[in-house]
Image 1 (tube, one colour):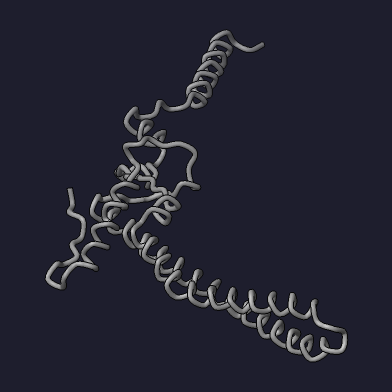
Image 2 (cartoon, rainbow, N blue to C red):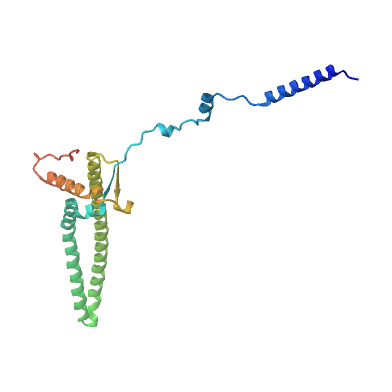
Length: 211
């Protein structure tokens, strides 16, 4: 039989082992400072960027192209160049019509030579009219391209002077406040530029002043 003292010692030893096992299984409390550092995610690089306001303006390019004094000048040059040729073509057309009326009244035997002449003159007129239309289209395209370049340059000059970041034309936005519309400013600048070009050489062309 096991002695009572021996049994008591075994029980105490078992309790000590159990206590040691429970203590070792409890996780150690983390340092509050360490936990906060580990739980904080790294900051994004975007957070370090300071947002800057973007200045946006609108402009009606179609209105500028139609109302700029440079447009009226370009149309005048086209009329001066092509109106005399158009009048000459109309004169040839009237002459051909008159010849047709004359042939219609001639006897059968007299019409052959006149009709040959009529066909020859009609071919010449057709070629002349085709050349006229082609040259007029080309001249209009070149004039429009030059006008568009002048308008774009004026818009950019105003943009720089007004410290504007982006300028949107009429087809690039749905609605905007009239306060951001620089169309009139650009039109005034185009007028000033036009006046300076046609003024005496002593009148310099000035850029728009910065506000």
